[in-house]
Image 1 (cartoon, helix red, strand yellow):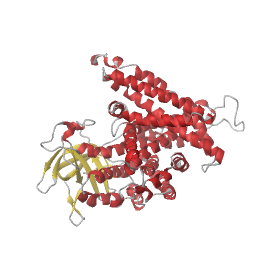
Image 2 (tube, helix red, strand yellow):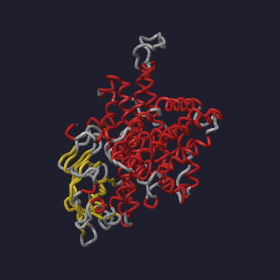
Image 3 (cartoon, rainbow, N blue to C red):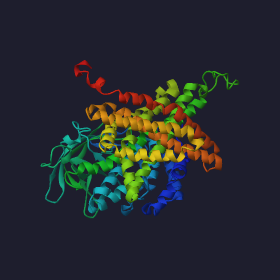
Length: 598
């Protein structure tokens, strides 16, 4: 496997040339105090060292050895505790955390790139700190001052980690039917009893304490999701003097043996009258947990991107070195026994697919992260627009990026041929690790339903309108730019097609809601390819200007970016055409067949 190299130049290009993040930060008082261009660059460079030098070397061993379980004790793979300690010493666990409790307060645009580095190096390792960051976000927003002072500071410091405990054996996406109970106690705490499965980081040896965020129901709670409350349940109780006390009544019953992410502990957690503390209001737990879940859904999308980036780097290095056959137009390396497989059209197709989709995903991820920063740090109309776009695009980030991520890990495996199927090259690990990203934190089918039913239809198209109006304004501003015409024209058509498809589906659904369910997956991908086209035009525009003005990224970089943009518009954006046809075909062909005839 190729050694992982963080794409720092592309990340800097997006931050400072495409999105002008440093200018944005200076306009937002809460961010202006925390970060500027020089700080951002230093953070990216130092994080790159961690990813390349500490995490990349342990990933293969982590996959082969995995985590072990012995009588309730989970031990991580060799090198993980040492790498985690190095990560903590660098202050990375509090990178995006609330400054009032020891966090660094960095914007999401930076932390998203930080997460990509971790995931490209090793998704299994990344899960431990990223889940803690998500739990910290929920606690910071909804927890009492006492809980924040006692737990949040230790989570940001890296002394303690966290998990989120939602899923039960009978209750996956339908959280309204969970059975875990919370009984009020005289001291204001709650006794938590129940069992949770698929709990990432539920037990391990990386930190001295683990803070579990647990969904449970009070005895008199309303039925369904309206009766869910959220509780903080520590592995070890905390004494009044802030020292660790006795072990709480929470234990790991077993660990799952999985297809991938072997070095990530996926646990069955048992709560046997464990002491817990309410976060937020009674029966409002799902809203509190969704603060974390939405953070994690974007993070899972970045996991897909991270695996895809690593796949591309591996495949590109292999393709340049692998000698097989001759170019159809004649030998390119007549002094050698064969040409490199880079001369073959199908290999170039696969590599360019990966390159265009990876760079597009990173750019779209940065755009979504920017909306989250506006939603968090801005005010008034700017904040409202950021909130709307972040809500609209969260399911896209999770599902579209992970679908493309898995596609690109398989594509990279195909470039390797037979060598991609054996363990020696490490490529097959990326395929196995990336596969879970399409499943957890809400399957991609559920994300598609969330986008079309809740965000688009549920808002009567108003959330989508926020996005389409922004793109329309951009098109109008640049339609007279002849140099951009090759990009603006297909973007304009794609936007028109998206609007027309949306109207068609919303009209059909008035008489049959199955129309939305049948077309949701296709619709999400149409939206994803269109949104990515918008961001690719922005990158092309900046690259054209860079070539004319000798911009900071360099001539070869800009040329590569423009070539890749052209590839995206000519070879990948047309994918949406077949998706539109499928989405418009209706639901009858799915629902007219009786279950017995499957």
